[in-house]
Image (cartoon, rainbow, N blue to C red; front, side, top):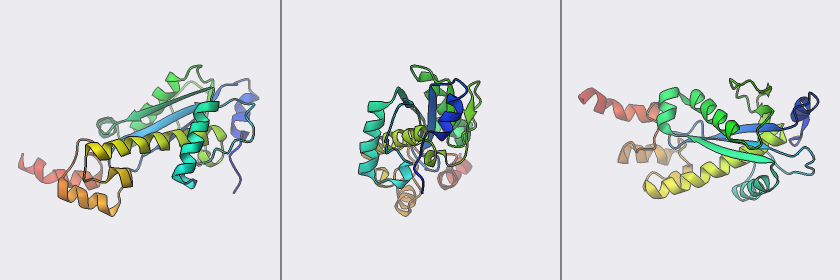
Length: 208
């Protein structure tokens, strides 16, 4: 499989947009915790970067490369959309809102964007092909930050909400997560609009 490179970014650079931010998310399919979005501007002079889609890397490698992203990036930001925002806007709307917040906080500001199929409502020039985290170095860098920052947060939530196993499954629909929901009920960090969580709230709604 080819490694990510600057081919997509170069489409913006040739039009004079030199600060190109890659944007990616982690946690869209989880039942609990936030969806996390990162935006990263890499220097166009970067060479021999090993950044890759976080899903194909082991945890230790992700952590090492995320630290390298923070070291070499021109700018980077991470934003979270928590369950209340997800339940209010739906997961796509909340992901877009977090992405736009992350882009807005970049300093210096991005002049163009490459996203992993996030078709954001923005005045910035945008490329949003599917699987951009496997194509673009900037998007791969963003995927590393989003994944490692969210994983660290879910470890903390595992301590704050013991018994759910957030530190192991990171809020996704693992069998032990479903069992914990049945046993412990819905926590404050669960996405109440998601079907496996909503089904547990129905009896309470009917009885109220």
